[in-house]
Image: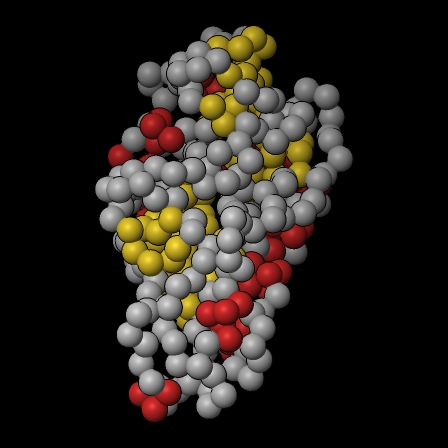
Length: 300
């Protein structure tokens, strides 16, 4: 894929916790960002028209999709959300402070951007989708910012967004807006997995197809600017909360279902992943939702 811009993923390597066989070793690391190409507007203003730009910068501007608009993975310009796209913008922003790098031609370090901006994107995604439990869905927060050429031209934009993610955490091409989608019908986007979250990262599959786990909700455990819990604390919090959520989801009578969960590593915690995600795991593969008709329609 061409270009040198940044797209950050909402799904990355998360630490694993096992219910059935003890605790797994945590995995760490943020998934490599995808690339987006920033394209200058055809009629860029002149330097004299941009009094706030550093004098040594070029004056080119970039057309970037705004809140409620969509973009694709190759170009930040707006795309009609009814047409194929990869990201729907939830928040517009401009880098300031240390991240602005007014006297440098180099964009800020990826880790610094994730740490300072991605928690905002996580909150924007929750507000936009209508549920702060979206980690239990196939939708995830996303972050795009000016590439190296665009940065050198003096542009400092970034955009938070949401994307529908595949099993590798990559944004899938889709059509139609997801604004408020999880408030309307969470089941349409619920994360079902062909792998067991108690053993490895979930691999999404439509719930109508054969799967061995369904996400049933999330448990908030803190804020990214606070110290992350220990593995013991994560485990203790998840055991009771996820057990309750699974029972509420499948009912009291299911004996072929066990709760499992996943929690974030320290890097992802700092980037805003402060939820435990709870799953119902089945002894045998199943098709269709296992949700009890009397359970809440939206997880929490």
